[in-house]
Image 1: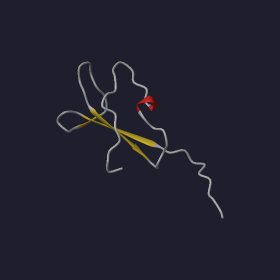
Image 2: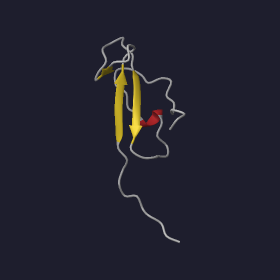
Image 3: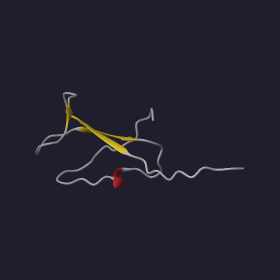
Image 4: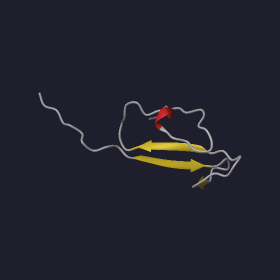
Amino acid sequence: MGFKVDTVAPTVGIDLTNAAGTSISSLKAGETAKVVFTLSEDVIGFGSQSVRVSGGYLSDFKQDSTN
């Protein structure tokens, strides 16, 4: 029986979309956005506690059911 050790850390892509569905790179006070985190591989334990937010808050954090 053999095994393979994964020594490469996963990467994370972050995409923000405004209410109109347009891709954006930042938010101003009072604005909201859908934030999508795309991981390069399956990970264990990635959740809202893994994300640091400054000047706002993260809500309705959930995994996409298709992933």
